[in-house]
Each structure stands twice: as structure tokens, then as C-alpha cells.
Length: 551
Ligand code: C2E
Ligand code: MG
Ligand code: MG
Image (cartoon, rainbow, N blue to C red; front, side, top):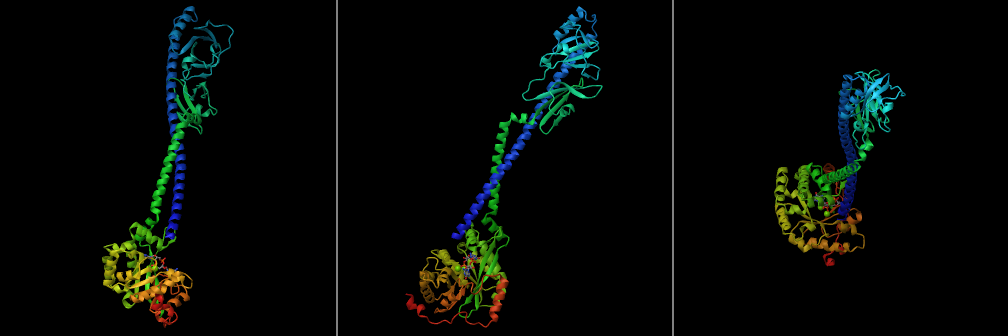
């Protein structure tokens, strides 16, 4: 039990560690994935926002261009004398009725001759040089000297000798938090793009090459161009600015993803654990016929002849660890599938030993059966079927039942009766470890007892366990039970039992370890070929073992 508990504690620790690691890993992966996915979504949203902003701005720009062209056309068609008071008054009317313009006038030799607000312009003024010449020949001036406004970009356009100045307070781009903009134009003569107004980013190439949609390593750009002239609006924003507004959302989404990732990790660990749990591994191994069966000889202590064998099951788990049958048989019992192990062992025994069993009528192989087998209504028919199929007599297949299984269970008694009735030899295993008395054994009506190795181990010691041995041997003799002694490892232990009154059978490393079927059969053949010297001192009546001294 301690071994089982120890193994289960180790397994539980491993599972806990696995679950914690999987949860942490899942959370970390979830956090990263969540952060990057949320970042991508937020940047895509910003991109859409920028595109909307650029579209609205270019629409405004187109409307103002349309108005300026209309005013310039009217001025060109004007019948008034150039810069006459009538024309200046007419210009004022045009500007008054316009939405986007603040000034209209006439130029001569690059200088303003008259305008709607100045009337006649001062004689002393610098010559204006166009910054861009557009496709249609119109000239564009940035911040014309007579009409500049501190801190505002002012644009003037000249067609022929007429010019208009845009009102910067109307034609400015809409305000949008953290969005930067640049209005660019292309000079028809040099074909190079330049800034009309707004602000260029540190790396202006992304704006000046005027791609409709672009994303540099650290910024997003959306550009829309006018259909009426060569001006374009680029709205742009750095990633940091785009994410700053959504930092909370970003953290929230990352947190949710980390949580989801953690839960998924835990779920995966649980599923993996379930699949890797010992019961699952064991069941898989049984279903894949991956359990091994080994055989240990049981000898007649007087002659040294191998007269029986015990079939013992072996299992190596997925981690390549050999699990003790004490542990996995218990797991199978708890899982309700120990019957599958019993079936597997019986099948193997009959496959490996049918020939020997039929040629050596005195030889027997014993299988261990578990408590659930005794209560399983399919057990006896299954056993009979297996024997019939292999053509083996029931006498050649013995059954070992652990003492504790049989205690106070009517169903165990009935099954034992049936087994014996069919000719099977029934032994009580690990005798002395349970609480059944010899009288109870009589009631159970078995053929033999296998004295537990704890008694053998105690031989040569002062332990009280040894003092009970003579009593057990005498009572077994009285009840006519064969005695098999388990766990004989030394000559001293063998010699102790050789002195007993009755015939004793012995099992233990002194006579042979559990081995695979072919090794066992070789051992059996070798054992046969030897002249059988007594395996231990000849049996003598020993005072210590007399029935009288047991009481
Ligand atoms: P068990 O039926 O009492 O089997 C004897 C155990 O003692 C075996 O342990 C065997 O390897 C071990 N043994 C044999 N000689 C010596 C020795 O000289 N010294 C020592 N210290 N040990 C010795 P194993 O194979 O580990 O099996 C442990 C138990 O697992 C078995 O005890 C039995 O109760 C159970 N078991 C094994 N195979 C099966 C099986 O096929 N079905 C069922 N239901 N239980 C099984
Ligand atoms: Mg046994
Ligand atoms: Mg035993």
C-alpha cells in the first residue's frame, strides 16, 4: 500500500507540475497572441479611421478647389476694367459670397496690383514666385507675402492675371486627435511632389510617394488624391499614437487572451494527463496485448524438482518504467478492469504451456486471480472456454487467491467450490497476512496455502512471526493442505522448512527468478535432465516441528 501511495504521490506531484507549467505556458502564449492580435486589430481600425479622414479632407479640398476655379473663371469673364473701383467692388462681392476664399485680386509681373481687401496694393512689395505649377497651368503660392497669417498656412492660386487666396480657417483639415496630415502637390514641370500645407513626418518618403495606403515600421499612412487637380491629402499616425488611445483595450484583450490561454493550457494538461494517467496507460497496454507474463518455478523442497510455476504479470508504462504488479493490479481493480488482466494471463499461460501441461500431467501453472474475478459471473465460463480451446485439463491450471479476498465472502466460497469441482487446484496466497484462521480455511475448502514471504524473511531472527510458523505448518498438515513457502532466498531459509514433518513446496529466488516462458521451459528441461539430489537436508522429525510443540 505504501508503494502504491508513494507512486501515486509522485504521479500527483508530476501532474500538478505539468498542470502549472501548461497553465503558465498557455497564459504566456495567450498573452503574446492576445497582445499581437489586439494590436493588429487596433492598427487596422486606425488605418480605417485614417482613410476616412483622408477621404473627408480630400472632399473638402475638392470643394474648395471647385469654388476657387469658379471665382477665377468669373474674374476672367469679368467685363469690368482691371482693378477699377467697380472690379474691386465686384471682387468683394465674389469673396463675400464664397465659402472657402478670403481674397481675390489681380497680379502684374508677380506683384499684387489690387485685391478685394487691399483695394490697390502698395507699390512696395516682393515679387511672388509660385511653389507649384499645376497641370492646367495654374500657379500655387504658399504664404503669399501680403496675405500671410501668423501660424497658419495660406495658399493662393493664380490663373492668368487673377488670383484667389484660400481662407485658412475654413480650408484647414478637420481636427482629429493624434492624426497628422500633409497636403502635397506635384509640380507639372519638375514632376516632383512637395508639401502644400500640413506637416511632413520625419521620414517624408511615405507621404511624398503618395501610396493610397501604406504602413512603415512605426506609422500608418492613408492618402487620397483630388480628381480636379494634383493635390493629395495624406493622413498619418505613429503606431504608438494609434495604440496610446487604446492602451486599456489592448491590456484588457491581452489579459482576456492570457486567461483563455491559461485555461486552454490547463485543459490540454488535463486531457493529456487523463490520457497519460496510469489507468489509461494500463488499459491501453492491456488492449494492445502489451503486458508480459513471466513464470517462477515452485519446487518440491525434498527433491528439488520443479512441480509448479506461478504466472506473474509484468507491465512497463509509457515512461518506460516497470510498474510493480502490486501497484497496477490494484489500479486495475479500482478501475474495474482487473478481469482483463486475468483473461490476458490465462490466455498467455495456455498459449505458452498447453504442450507441457499435456505431456506432464503432474506439472501445474498457477495464475493469480483478483477479488472481482471471484464475483464475476463470466469468469468461470471464460476459464472453461479457454481450457477447452487449448485442450488442457483443469488440473494443469491452478488458481491463487489472496487471503484477504476470501474473507467473509460467500461468493468467494462458491467460486472456489466450483473451481475445485472442475478439478482446478486452489491455493490461498500470501497466507498469514490476513486475518483468516486455519479453521476458516477448512471451511473454504482449498487445496493449499502459500505462506507469505514475510514469514520466510523472519527466519533466523528473533521475530515473533517465526514463532507462529510451526503452528501454521502443523495445522495445515492436520487439514491436509499442501504448503508452499514463498520468498526463499537463502539456503538457511530452505533448510528451515526442509526439517518440517510434511512435504513442503518452495518458491523463491534460491530456486529461480520469474522468467519468460521459453527461459522457463529450458529451465524445466534442465531440471528434468539432472539427477535430483535433495534440494536441502533430508526431512527429519524435528522436535521443534512436532504437533505437540505447536500448541
Ligand atoms: P504473489 O502472488 O504473492 O507473487 C509472489 C511475489 O513474490 C512476486 O512478486 C514474485 O516476484 C515475488 N518473489 C518471488 N520469489 C521471491 C523471493 O525470493 N524474494 C522476494 N522478495 N520476492 C519474491 P511480483 O511479481 O512483484 O508480484 C506481486 C504481486 O502482484 C503478486 O504476489 C500478486 O499478488 C500480484 N500479481 C502478480 N501477477 C498477477 C496477476 O497476473 N494477476 C493478479 N491478480 N495479481 C498478480
Ligand atoms: Mg501468487
Ligand atoms: Mg504470495
